Image 1 (cartoon, rainbow, N blue to C red):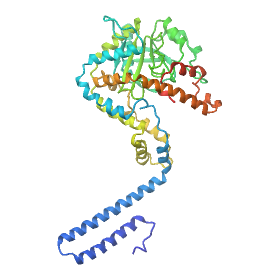
Image 2: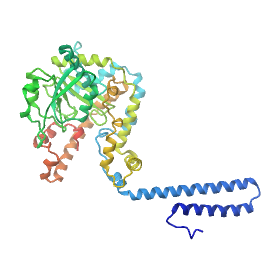
Image 3: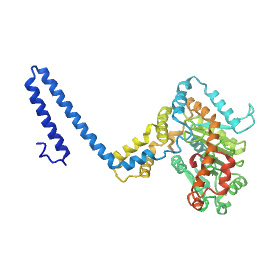
Amino acid sequence: NLYIVDKSDHTFHNITFLWLFIRSIMTVEMETTISGWDNYAVIQVVVLMGILSTVSYGACRVMDWLWKRRGVFSELHQALKFTPYGTYTNMFEYWFIHVPFALKAPFCQRQVLEDQIQKQLTTLFQLPPPESSSRPAFLLSHSCRTLFYCIIQTLLDQAQAKTGRRRIRIATVAVHFGSFYKLIKSMNQAGDEIEFYEIDLDPVDWTVKHDQIQEAQIAQCHVIFHQNLFGVPLQQDKLLDLGRKLNLLIVEDCVQSGSMYGKYKGDPRSDVVMWSGGFDKTPSCLGAGIGHYRPTPYGDAMFDSCQSMMSSFALDQHRMSTMFNQLLHLGIAKNSFSVVLYLGGLVVAYLLKREDLQLHDMAFCVRTNKSVTPFQSAKDKFCHQPSNWQLLSMIYGIGKQRHYEHIAREEVEKRVLLLQKVPSQYHATIWPWLTPENLDLHQSNLGVSEFTWI
């Protein structure tokens, strides 16, 4: 019977073999068995052999499927998983430092933690000690998005009180985070109008086109959003000078200015300078928003308004779920226990089911689902006060100055090595923003590029 079975039909072949095996076992055992218990034992053996045969058949099918797609899995295993998220921390810090803060947090006084962070930042920024009667120089929030939200809402409220319409206009450069627009979109409520006057970048070297900046257009704006790019301060002198001339609020986002551990601590013409914390940023912590409100009329007014608005927010009660989300992204970034290989295999097997799949296809597939991103733009995700757990994490993250300085020096060395290994005639095409001026800024500022690292 086994000989006449078509060998290409593996399923029928296995079933036939299993049936013949059962018959032979049952025939021999039934002739020699004495009690019903022995017959039951024989049935157990037969069932076990059937299960093992089925499992082995399934395993062969899986191995055959993997072998046909071995190129994708080889790429997943060998590719360098150096993504920005998780660059400035590791699993040891996560499990043995940030997670235990959850046990310590209930026994800490919130004001003591906030005062400690204020002292750390005052020292880092080399500011004079504040007088007892003066306001703090910094405002701490759940996220940098929280600070930006409060500033925009303040401007909308002021516009409504002045003109009866919640309408503002923002002057900024045309290239910045895509999440900036998503954040603005999440703020738009019924009746709100937020417009933009955008200054384009030169397509050759990606510097600001200062000749396109029109004073008449800037005069119609309510705020200048000073966005830095490429890990160094983005030169926008004409825009900032017009802001001072026209007495406009200037808000600077320093997430991509080279981090607050470089020499650059924000343009002196800015009223509010913001930094964001997270495992993919510096300070490396469980999320943070740090706003330096300068002692200017706009800085003082915005500090009072933002502080009042944030005091009405509830304390963050979702830190545990946020921790799990960040753990997932940290594990992927560090490829802990080869998790990228396994997750990539699952994506290949159950989501896309394509033999010609490439890594960038999976990246695009995952990135379209914003529900799994570590930091989200929905209002209910960031309109909270930071918990004691988060404040403890911020204290630790801000104190890692030597670690960040080491990363900055290493980054400069890697950038030099990279440019040496790529023929110079291709530099301007691949990295148009790496002009001689920007390279000098990287060298002199010694900041961490964060989202434009090497």
